[in-house]
Image (cartoon, one colour):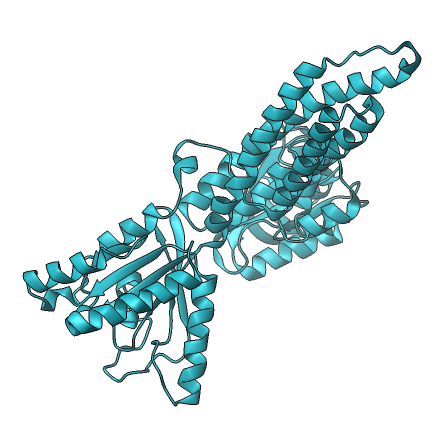
Length: 470
């Protein structure tokens, strides 16, 4: 894939299938010559002689057969997405027309583009670095406001600029250390060790912040899993339906209706939450239901947040004690996992009973309490607001750099390890040549993020995950 950059490629750039309009993209050295042989402008002008960034109306013809009336957009190198000559053909969205034009382009000398090949060429031609190229795929896949915001920030170079600044500062000191090796016999120091120590501390802090941001970045990209658990008939399926505003789960008065986990997603406050309705927790002899209950405990372990639902009208003084013991067991097994006690059916409680129950539950440490009626859909907003409070989205509001890519996260971890090795070497007063080894490794891992250090296998793996036409 990496070696085929001198030919002219084409692909459908819009979504597959019929629509009002479709876009077919062509890029490469023969773009204008190939399209010029099949496009006939109404102005009678030759497109090869037209200015870049202009649009022309005309017909696509296969010999004397008119395939479609189209708009052709011209982008001459290097002022294009790929850095090459690019033409985008805007045709009618008939699947037949799309395929006819594509097949005609292939017969005239184009090759069908590989997945992500347009963006790969943009990277190879210096139009964007590797982290920005990966952000293009994230932007296309974004399905929430937060995911979109992070992808836009990275595509505009926010993350890569921060990495480049770190790398440039390290590279400067690495060069001075390397220079010292040429004058080893004179025993001179070109790199100020005190400034170097300060720089290493500064870089360590920045790398740790970026690494820590992956926790929020990962849930933004993958969605935040929320397990809805509790006893049978507490209203878990009704709550899921109320959150989704649709009848997704079966609701019944018969205990044990939900025997497997049911999952669905919604966006709340720009973040994607993945709700998991689980089987009711109780002792049962039903083997199938038992499997469902086992899965419930698995989902609690996998969830980012746990909603422990309870039927408030069934809570008496005695049952409150048992319920508090159940909560304590869950907290003991997962002490760091956020847990919200959801009091359901509070519309059927008196004010005094509701007050008594909530005051008693407030004695449980490190839990939040939300009262609602899933059936009446009251209190749902309070619950969603509480869920957002568990997500540290301050970085989003402050436009901080957030790491969402596991490849970047891995490289940052390795770069930090090498920086800490350099710091240890400085404390042990190691010679410059030994410090330079770890410093070069750190530079390598940082360069791996932006593509300053790369290889064909890495590029192949990254761009294979793109859609064809991008």
